[in-house]
Image: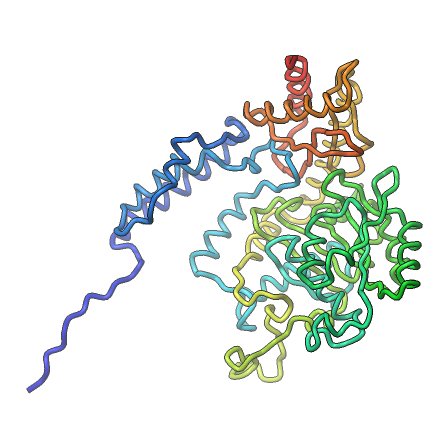
Length: 491
């Protein structure tokens, strides 16, 4: 007698009601488009009040909630309290602002739970390889340069310096580790370098003591004479200089090191030349200002973001490495459970490495899609014009500051960052520092604009980093008026 099969109800995370979920999706797209289209009409940011913060306490729900209710809670408790970097008057730190096509691409990538990096012959990898090649060509690197899309310049810097270490060490670092080094390896950067360089140096086992901070000149560029002297002194004491890090736009001031001179020093001293081009690298595509980063194309490795001055949504960055084989040698690893190059019907003899052979991550999302779609939508010439527009807006703001007797410029503008402060006769620097911090806070808390603050030679300045395609000149007129109004109103 045939045995009766037990009926088992198997579950899924797909919608039970596809029609209502589809309607919710249409509503979400409409709401997000309304949000972006009207973004100028809202405060730049606002803090979540105590009652909103209290709503994030408690255990996870054991049972389901209606999707519409989950979305309503997002609109009520999450959406209004964003960092604000998509707003045209957000200029704090150095942050990009996103694009509509980039937003759509994130939806498309998520819709297939897209993976990038493994499985050589899939279209996602070809998209990433093309975006990397576009970056290579736009930034002046030669054919054959390798690269990888990353989550940010911290990852890009870690990858670039890992290749530098393994290539310049003079022994098999992957086998012996740092204990195989006969001499202390040393690296050099300016006092203005981004903290991600120190983090990478520490993570790679050099130790922070190996990172030499070179003094800067009056323009806050690395002092090349001091650099030469430090390298010579290290060689004399038995150290092994392996890498010099140059800056194509420092975070504090936008200062650009003399990259050509650094490339010459690295060639003479047999050092790896790494450039931190987090945002400033993209000046290379501006017709008027590309010469500001001349010499960058001579770097052995270059780290840069696309979620800053290419205006894409977080996260997306890139690293380029001139020596593709050295790049692959640093990271390639193929255990049996990841064997590839087998069973590719019709593709016999074609060697397409996994992109995960060029970085430390195997699990990688499809970050390249938003760059691929947005660059196709807008074109590189428009991007070049927008970057030029931001630089000229910085010079416009510089002029406004120079014309206002209540304001003082920190130093001449070199790229897209303006640092200035409110001044009042008779006040000492310590009081002016406090006053400008108060002005920053009031600008932010009143939702007028978001600058940040930086300290330069012991003085605190308002910091305006212009990497926003939505900013207009009248936004900077408003900023100057409000800084003066708030400053005059503080006792």
